[in-house]
Image 1 (cartoon, rainbow, N blue to C red):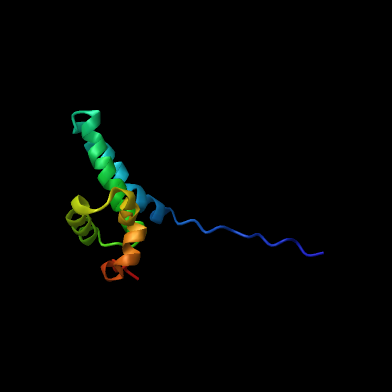
Image 2: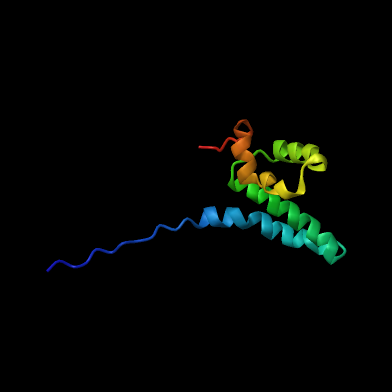
Length: 99
Protein backbone atom coordinates (compact mmCIF):
# COMPACT_ATOMS: atom_id res chain seq x y z
CA UNK A 1 0.00 0.00 0.00
CA UNK A 2 1.40 3.38 -0.98
CA UNK A 3 1.84 6.13 1.57
CA UNK A 4 -0.71 8.95 1.30
CA UNK A 5 0.46 12.05 -0.53
CA UNK A 6 0.82 15.20 1.46
CA UNK A 7 -1.27 18.00 0.08
CA UNK A 8 0.14 21.36 1.03
CA UNK A 9 -1.48 24.74 1.15
CA UNK A 10 0.61 27.46 -0.40
CA UNK A 11 0.53 30.48 1.83
CA UNK A 12 1.46 33.87 0.52
CA UNK A 13 2.27 35.90 3.63
CA UNK A 14 3.59 38.86 1.63
CA UNK A 15 0.22 39.29 -0.08
CA UNK A 16 -1.76 39.20 3.16
CA UNK A 17 0.72 41.47 4.94
CA UNK A 18 0.57 43.97 2.08
CA UNK A 19 -3.25 44.03 2.23
CA UNK A 20 -3.13 44.84 5.96
CA UNK A 21 -0.46 47.50 5.63
CA UNK A 22 -2.92 50.39 5.25
CA UNK A 23 -4.70 49.42 8.46
CA UNK A 24 -1.44 49.11 10.35
CA UNK A 25 -0.19 52.49 9.17
CA UNK A 26 -3.58 54.06 9.77
CA UNK A 27 -3.76 52.69 13.31
CA UNK A 28 -0.80 54.83 14.30
CA UNK A 29 -2.15 57.89 12.51
CA UNK A 30 -5.63 57.53 14.00
CA UNK A 31 -4.27 58.29 17.46
CA UNK A 32 -4.36 61.95 16.46
CA UNK A 33 -7.96 62.17 15.22
CA UNK A 34 -9.13 63.96 18.35
CA UNK A 35 -12.42 62.15 18.98
CA UNK A 36 -14.45 59.04 18.24
CA UNK A 37 -16.53 61.01 15.75
CA UNK A 38 -13.37 62.15 14.00
CA UNK A 39 -12.32 58.52 13.64
CA UNK A 40 -15.62 57.37 12.17
CA UNK A 41 -15.30 59.57 9.09
CA UNK A 42 -12.04 58.06 7.79
CA UNK A 43 -13.31 54.59 8.73
CA UNK A 44 -16.33 55.09 6.46
CA UNK A 45 -14.16 56.44 3.65
CA UNK A 46 -11.69 53.54 3.92
CA UNK A 47 -14.59 51.09 3.89
CA UNK A 48 -15.99 52.72 0.76
CA UNK A 49 -12.61 52.71 -0.96
CA UNK A 50 -12.02 49.06 -0.03
CA UNK A 51 -15.38 48.16 -1.54
CA UNK A 52 -14.44 50.05 -4.73
CA UNK A 53 -11.14 48.22 -4.84
CA UNK A 54 -12.83 44.83 -4.37
CA UNK A 55 -15.24 45.52 -7.26
CA UNK A 56 -12.52 47.11 -9.46
CA UNK A 57 -14.29 50.48 -9.49
CA UNK A 58 -12.39 53.70 -10.13
CA UNK A 59 -13.00 55.54 -6.81
CA UNK A 60 -12.76 59.02 -8.32
CA UNK A 61 -15.33 58.32 -11.07
CA UNK A 62 -17.58 56.56 -8.56
CA UNK A 63 -17.57 59.36 -5.97
CA UNK A 64 -17.91 62.07 -8.61
CA UNK A 65 -20.96 60.41 -10.13
CA UNK A 66 -22.56 59.57 -6.78
CA UNK A 67 -22.10 63.05 -5.33
CA UNK A 68 -23.54 64.66 -8.47
CA UNK A 69 -26.60 62.40 -8.58
CA UNK A 70 -27.32 62.02 -4.86
CA UNK A 71 -29.35 65.22 -4.23
CA UNK A 72 -31.97 64.37 -6.86
CA UNK A 73 -31.98 60.57 -6.44
CA UNK A 74 -35.03 58.89 -4.84
CA UNK A 75 -34.37 57.47 -1.38
CA UNK A 76 -35.98 54.12 -2.19
CA UNK A 77 -33.36 53.48 -4.92
CA UNK A 78 -30.17 54.13 -2.95
CA UNK A 79 -29.09 50.53 -3.58
CA UNK A 80 -28.12 51.66 -7.08
CA UNK A 81 -25.24 53.56 -5.52
CA UNK A 82 -23.55 50.47 -4.07
CA UNK A 83 -20.26 49.85 -5.92
CA UNK A 84 -21.27 46.44 -7.28
CA UNK A 85 -24.57 47.80 -8.68
CA UNK A 86 -22.94 51.02 -9.87
CA UNK A 87 -20.20 49.26 -11.86
CA UNK A 88 -22.84 47.15 -13.64
CA UNK A 89 -24.45 50.37 -14.87
CA UNK A 90 -21.10 52.09 -15.60
CA UNK A 91 -18.74 49.42 -16.99
CA UNK A 92 -16.49 52.08 -18.58
CA UNK A 93 -15.42 53.16 -15.06
CA UNK A 94 -13.83 49.79 -14.32
CA UNK A 95 -10.40 50.22 -12.79
CA UNK A 96 -7.58 48.43 -14.52
CA UNK A 97 -5.92 45.78 -12.42
CA UNK A 98 -2.20 45.15 -12.74
CA UNK A 99 -1.40 41.74 -14.19
